[in-house]
Structure formats: C-alpha cells, structure tokens
Image (cartoon, rainbow, N blue to C red):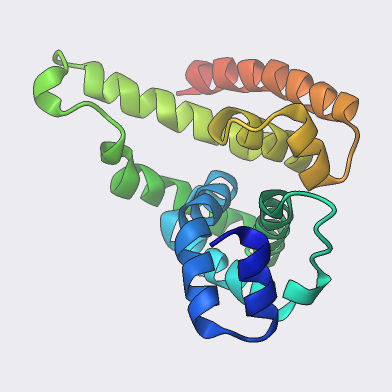
Length: 189
C-alpha cells in the first residue's frame, strides 16, 4: 500500500492503516529521536508522541514534499521540545545510560577486540556524544541528520526549514567545533 493511500485511510481514522504506517516508519522515527536525544528510553517516549501528532494532524499533510520529510520535521520538533522541557543536567546524565544500554549493539564482540580496544571504543563514543551535546542545537541536528541518517543537504533543509547553503554552513562549523570539543574532552579526561 503506497503512502498516499495510507494517509487517505488514516485521515478517515482507519486504525489498521495507521498500524501499517507506524510499522513502516517506526524505526525511522526512533532513529531520529535517538540521534537527537541520545537516550533510547526517551527516544521511545518521544517517538510515540510523534505518531500521536501524525495521527491527529494527518489532514495537514499537503503532499508538497515527501512523507518522510514531514515525518522528520515532526520528529525533530518533538525531540527538541522534549529537550527544552528537561533540565540540562538530567540530559547529560542520560548519555551515560546510552553507553551502558546501547553501545554494545553496534560494537564488535569482545572476542573480536584486542585487549584495551573496547575501553578505547567506549571512550571515543563518550567523547563524541559529549561534544555533540555541547554543539549549538541547529549544528547538532544538521550533523546528526547528515551523519547518522545519511540525509542530503536538501532533505535537511526541508526538515529544518532553512536553505541548503545554511545546512552546509551548520555542518562545516559543527564539524570544526566538534574537533575542538573532542580535543578539549581528551585534554581534560
């Protein structure tokens, strides 16, 4: 079933169509939220809010852009709203939970690593997430969407409602700032 047909059925409050839609886009939404929030549990909560928003506002989708662009925009906005509502200290502490719960999913198994490599890998991830958390919000989002979601500058510009050249500036400045923050992190730790 194509997206426009699903959207039409969802606008008529067809629960089966909505279930299919959620199954189709759940992982995408979860990845977006997780890349911004850096906490799987928070990302799960926010992703549910994203689908509630989609269900309640499906009539506002005008098919002028791809459905994924609309979904990205809602997911980014919901994630940012969630970050604004949380205290900064709680958010930083949640990054530690991310490393404990999710870092092993994408790592090679211990048997494949030489002694000390696992510690180095964890420390590099910690430095990266620490640096990402310190970036200005727009830079963080642009880098996350480009690097973690493999979106083009055009797709990011549609999601963030900015020009493609501004996306490029955000990503370039963000990468330079990331380098500085990672160096600073290792000097201080």
